Image (cartoon, one colour):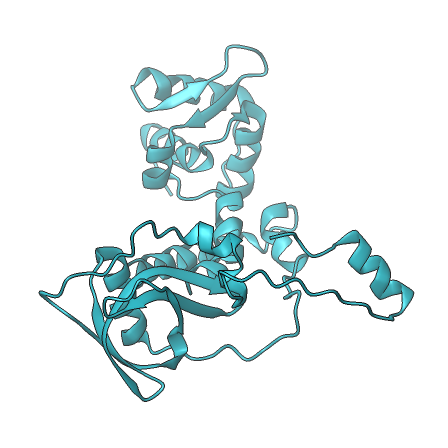
Length: 277
């Protein structure tokens, strides 16, 4: 612990910066966090005086003009000094499992590092019974709306090559379910439940086809080959036409269905009918 008064002040003010976030907080809240998270017991007026001193020193602090005074630190400085907020850590942990499958391989490592940082932050604060954000992980579970299925395995090197080709508009050659594809031009990536599908055109064809990533045996980047971009290709237009549901995008197929079911299921279908798209 610091021994001199000057060192004590510097230590307290540095800890105070860690208590700040990009969201406005009252001086009283910062005072309470300073005591709770850093075990620094001082008067609230001392906290207010320190905050004003830090502001005058040119640190990127912002405050409201009305009382009670609220303080925050600019976002880019919070990342360097205070780290992520509890709410941001919670958001990352909950969203990571849904994001990492669809992200390019070049961003997956960064997401894992961010996830580890968020998890570490929540683990430390999980011991604090009054930390509502950290406790939230014990109060929420996400379950699929459909019957749970075993997630198919996608080879990491294949996913990395395909996402690189997709981002750079570069054709590839591939072996798909044992069949050799001389040229494949990746156009879009569709996340459907737990399965990733590649929208791509073969050779110089204009038709866009599905390719499940877990069914690729091997993929190789083709250098010097022209990328086949069908004229007017728009993934959202195809999805509206039912392409994502593996329907014929040209012929309209209307299915009339009658069923007998229990009242509970009928109520569920009435409350949440299938969309028109």
